[in-house]
Length: 330
Image 1 (cartoon, one colour):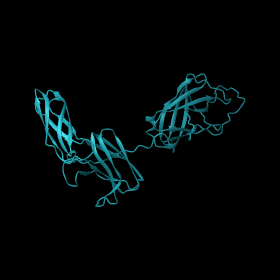
Image 2: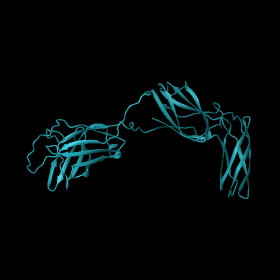
Image 3: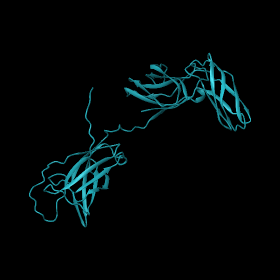
Image 4: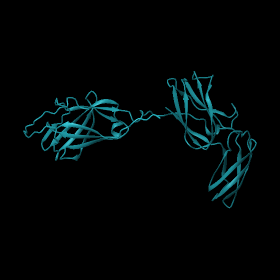
């Protein structure tokens, strides 16, 4: 089994804050180049700063306000400006938190940052290397989440088109997605008690007439949970064929004292797919439920499982195989 170590730590940066009291220092701060910071879009980033003097000893930053500024690559745009949070003034320790909301507004780039200390009437730069440079580099990357892209939506057949009209059998088709530049396209499907088959189809031309099947169909039975279909390969255009079996049965309810007592049915035909159709009862009342039973390919009976209450008039009974509510892709 392959394994790899991962690390969870906070970035720490030492920066030089020269003393201005005339003190004599025994040694020179050694770093020639400042360590490049790296921040990740999509998450919060906490950066710790240690303020030291030329002797590499902590500088007391009590009473100081230290401002962190991030500039764009070309230096002409201020991206972020915020004060550091003091963690230990006596030991010269502070932090800045760059939030995901702030970073999501900034393009991926190698930017620069600076620190300015305000203490009383004195405003001074904080140095990032031994050459008195007051700017360090910070790399803004998209390493945690992929770039956001708005989803595209396929136009679905109207609900009344599911399993009612007989042109092309019970097959209905979505609108087309242009995917010529993709080697893999992922489609997200949302359902409402959907029973039926879904199959991806491809074409070289937007205006058919030749559509070919891509892979095998996916069978769903009373599906309510979101699902995904991956389509491999390069296809100029992709659509989905939706096949819901059955020429719709109808139901007529009988109401006694506000309660649904029975439902008769016309039976419909050609219910040869997986599962049984849904029965939905709507009207001026609540709580009535029922289930359908098939005899061969016909709805033979509709059994009331809960009569509900408060039905002031005869409710509508809808016998259906559910719907796909949305198909999106990127």
